[in-house]
Length: 208
Ligand SMILES: [Zn+2]
Image 1: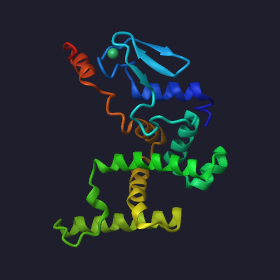
Image 2: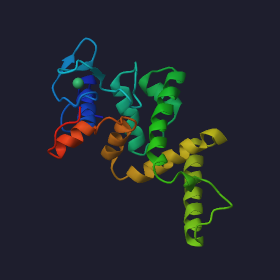
Image 3: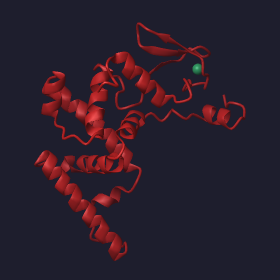
Image 4: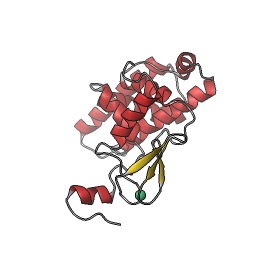
């Protein structure tokens, strides 16, 4: 994790993922901001809205160092086996905090795969897809079950969908840890591309 040696490195990285073309105010679309160091907030120079780097992401209102998040993202993105116990031990957190951290990251993976076909992960008897599609679904399901067995031994029925999402997420981005980390950062941050920015990209006037 040489890439994230300290909080500033994490902050820079997240900033670039959220605002690849520079800061954009989520309220008015202005691109000038000042950084309030004492509170770690960006303030829009035009409307004075204060925006946190982690607002609306899975790290929303976090009290944990950003580095912990990036490390957890990295472990998951690089296909490592991960458990709350391991996170707790490595980051010296108590078990409950580590569990909550993992849940949040799994939520991001869940949201990522939710956009695609969620029905994929059910053995739906009334499924009217063609036989070959059904077969493929069952194959994926059995692979996902195998992944869960190997990684987590057993899991409650309730957690199962989250683990399916995790399997799917790892499968989708397994080839590129960097892309996976970016997905985990921006998932939930719906304001990255605002209408204002869209208007500006198109060369049109910003919509107030
Ligand atoms: Zn503004």
